[in-house]
Image 1 (cartoon, protein in one colour):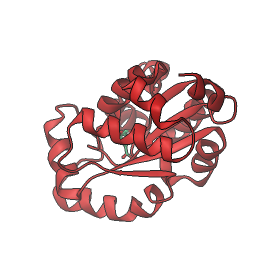
Image 2 (image 1 turned 180 degrees about the vertical axis):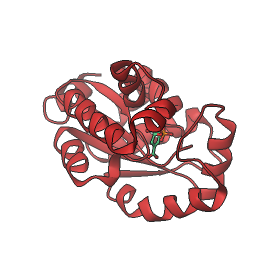
Image 3 (image 1 turned 30 degrees about the vertical axis):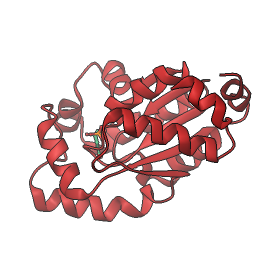
Length: 188
Ligand code: S3P
């Protein structure tokens, strides 16, 4: 725990990035709990701020309005300490957003085979304005992959349980000399 606090003085946030269906909002709270940090779901903060669900923001106000609020919320969150932040799948496509995440934290890409992303996104049971059909979903994924690849840490999530993914994240973070191995074992 101590080392996480020390690290927080420089990089004080962990951003979970990746495409729709990568489990950022599911894995985020488990990871945050394991290290005693806060969890922030950026899409939720947008919904609370605008007082509308994401799909209605897209339908009523348009994607560019959503992207502007998304950037505003990121800017607000980037001033916070000790939090795991689940970002929306489009967050990393914007250079300013990537710069801000880089300056204030480490970015972890939850990487899955695109077929699994599609399966996860369809199973998730909430409305996603950008999930129209399989082909456009995959096309969008391949157009964005280049941005996710700029993450500090990439976790291959296929065939792993949520707890496995969290443990892998903690081990990877240790390799970055953020915390000692012993302390990760204490935390998990
Ligand atoms: C988006 C992904 C969504 C949400 C919005 C836009 C995207 O979040 O931010 O619908 O552009 O990929 P999830 O990645 O949590 O589905």
